[in-house]
Image 1 (spheres, helix red, strand yellow):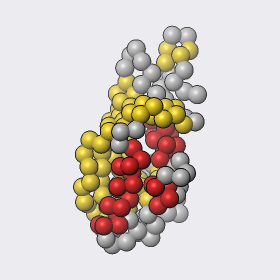
Image 2 (image 1 turned 180 degrees about the vertical axis):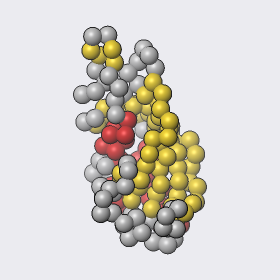
Image 3 (image 1 turned 90 degrees about the vertical axis):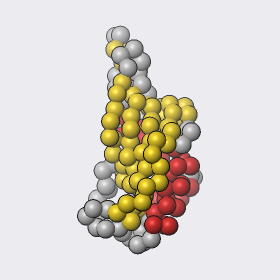
Image 4 (image 1 turned 30 degrees about the vertical axis):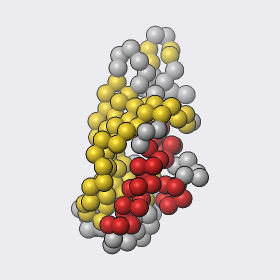
Length: 143
């Protein structure tokens, strides 16, 4: 697993994989709504206008020299599969429940050390399709 100490140097964990693995954990409300349509970048074959899902990207990342942790800002776009912001907000609330305040969650690709909502629930529109999306930014530490 990444993040292990090797000859005095910490290996950088793939933060995107850690978040993807955590959010695609079956049994959560977000997984129930979206299944595997929680991706970075968009999964091939998925039409955000017809199926609920979340697309996310890493906006910024820093790491400490003496620790194996990355501190990241992720931006999430929540799609509700309809032309209604209410449906996109349902996905956003499930994302919030899956991430905000979570600590020390181990997945196969690393550890979600802590996740906190930084900027929440902004209604927007997908620039390509015009579909309603709800944007959210989370500050997340991984290891």
